[in-house]
Length: 260
Ligand code: NAP
Image 1: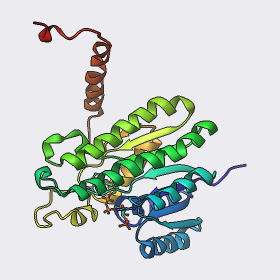
Image 2 (image 1 turned 90 degrees about the horizontal axis):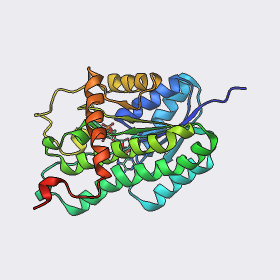
Image 3 (image 1 turned 90 degrees about the vertical axis):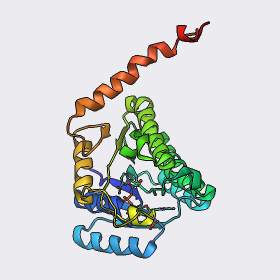
């Protein structure tokens, strides 16, 4: 007997999340769509249901709101049909750390870090027990590039990458797939929402191309997918350089340069 796959997507009301919803519905997944804009989610659900006949639930939730986050966690824990989580909802910041509003910083960390972590945690136990399940975390190349002057946003995305790699190490051997997707600049609403100068935007990837590449990476079994990176040996070399330091981290004495 084959069961219909069911996927919960956060941030499904626009941009990358909405394209995941489209592509996964067309792959025959039942969906649970999460975001704040319920009217928009209902519209997307009706369209995709008409096109594909998959069943689609909508949960209106502000993932920076504790009660809403708890409700989405409960859905992930209790709905045993959900076999994939697309941890996509996120926002960007305006940069300029010295001038940043502390409440805005907290909100960004709450959405990009706390919600992502808690939603992954909500499925991890069940997926590990079952020996299957997929978690897709949307990070960003900004998490690899402190030079871009987006310190808080980049730090949240570095967190998502690290979390994904940590979960790969912990849950991979138990049958759970964890993919981190690192988009570069992509044509979505995130730019307008973050207050970016709309007349001064960088060249960007089309959002359909980004999600199709990310799903291709998933199909190929990639753990880290960086859609615009043409030579993956560069990523492998980066990981090898990091791993080469690990034996030294077990040292119990300061390195010679610190001994006087
Ligand atoms: P987007 O079009 O602005 O979509 C963001 C999604 O997150 C929307 O569905 C939004 O829906 C939802 N969301 C925002 N705040 C929320 C909250 N408090 N609670 C629940 N949902 C919330 O941007 P996008 O580019 O598709 O972003 C998706 C992910 O890709 C983000 O994690 C982003 O950091 C990452 N990313 C984007 C780019 C890029 O250049 N576009 C590059 C790298 C990484 P509602 O407003 O309806 O809540």
